Image 1 (spheres, rainbow, N blue to C red):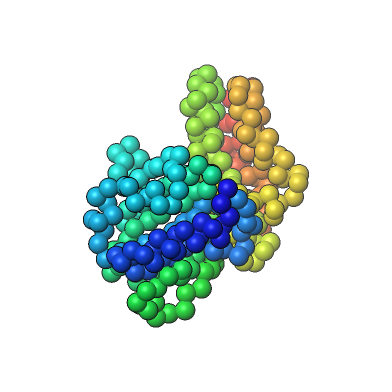
Image 2 (cartoon, one colour):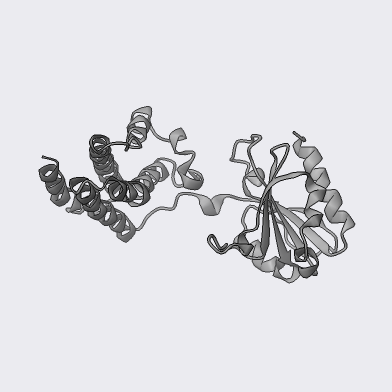
Length: 279
């Protein structure tokens, strides 16, 4: 595997030689001082160019970065269309380095800065960067919920609990698991992140898809949360559902108490239904 310095040198040399590339930035986890560094981090690079078509006409120039094992072009896909700006090349190379390279027209520079808080300037050929660009993950910190957001989270969790129960009673395990994983668990994780936010004065991020959550909760809570991912049988889905309900009840009551929010009746009303259907 090439070192980070070697690969960054390849990117810099390529951009410096190509006249149509005027600004180069790096963003994402590699610019975030609060993210542990490892060999699995992507190189999230953006080229600001004066002529997009000169790059889009063929992909041969991508070989300058290394031998590509697999390439994805989100803006060129039908089944998974991209919602990002510009045109992207997601590449993994034969030494397992991975680069997400985005091309943007040079005139979109200011808009980019407004939406990309973790940007760092690697190359600015014309001195167009007139502000001090300092990467910050503050916009990704856990946000203090309003009482309405808290209530919506509780409502969604307990209402969707009834869908999981329905799937289990009908013996439709995929239906039940979909609602467990895609909706119920999402609200449980959101509520736990609010608990973390309260305990840390809403001063940090728990990471994309809550990947750093284990660093900020007790081992007991973490182990219980992990146990809810065993959903390979009807018996285990029931166990996971009841544990999710227990965790959500416990954490949401704590959040309500700490933030002085009204604790709604959804829990009491739906829990009776869950108990009856389980029996």
